[in-house]
Length: 325
Image (cartoon, rainbow, N blue to C red; front, side):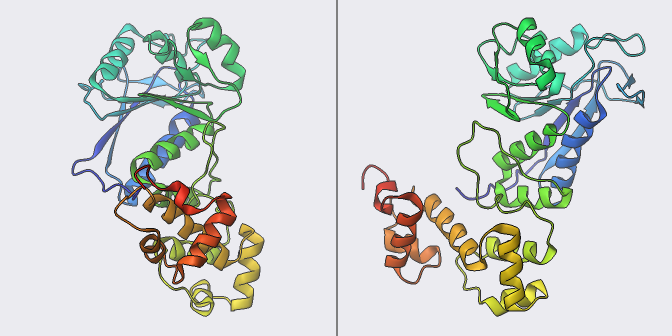
């Protein structure tokens, strides 16, 4: 699958701010989508509430806030977690207006995403019955008691179930937002955003395989990152070690040592991982022969491609072709 082309018009990301909102639940995802905008993602951020001003759980007044807009198909609605046990500044944590709007947004075809106790807003709107979801580990039992028909998942960072995405809260709201970004714009842009934010890309236990574009990025070495970016953007191109070393402002020997130290792979090994992932994407096209796929991925010798594929997957590449082949 290739990275999607940005939509012609920006996608609205609507933050539903509830009284007693946790600032990190709000700020983390908002920062992800804001940075994504800088890298070319078509997002338009809105911060809305049932009242013009609310107060965060940390005591910071927030406002003036926009009223809830008319929901549209394709909106992304993010609900940062509020304090449920103690109203802030005399305001109940949720109002009938907010509940009704969430129901209408879901009905209009919006994607709804909760952070931490924002899950409760989805529960109040009746959107959790029979649905896999998660929340902060300290609130799992409470949420299960409140919404007994919800399928609460423990020990995961986030879940996707149809139009509903939920996360464990606090810092995991960033992971959730990165996951939503990757679904829409692919792993390369997501890796750029994560690197800019200096965060470690994590995955929940539900996903079985991490993209190689996002893997091996849990370090802060700028030269190695530059080489990874170059290899990721030119997967099939030849990449002599001396050219990559110049890009990293290092000697070839120094680059190989640093790359191995920070990723566990040599530059050649990383390039092969990228090429095998591209090959896996091209396998779905029945018009391409295995030799053609090998060529598109930068393998001069199709036999070498077959050997690497078998070594990684334990079976020949022909087994990954569409059934008609």
